[in-house]
Length: 142
Image (cartoon, rainbow, N blue to C red):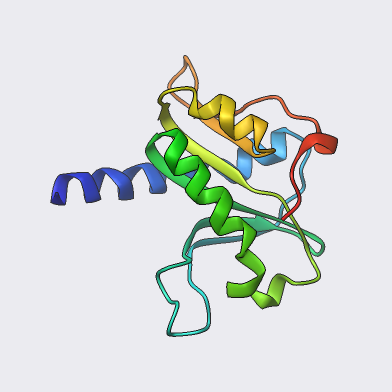
């Protein structure tokens, strides 16, 4: 189990380093950056942690990072994003879209993430993270 935890931290570290550049190249000017963001309320601390958070004055993108994403993990993240503002009220007046990042998407999880209106970040053939093409109009607002 320690190895799996270390792998998760490694993937989070690699993705958190790459996402600001990825979003910039996609034309999204996201300035603020945070890693392992926890809610202010101690009773929910850790239950609603955001792996990576990027944003600007009006627009924020929480990113869920996994070594492997399954459909179940995508659905779980979409549910968590549905209550994002409950755990992070400081973003109540911000536009929120969400992203998933993984080395591997199993069982059509990437397709489900697109259908759910999420941004999808993956490792491409050059072994670097890249953002799948997207249309801002089809992204889900949380």
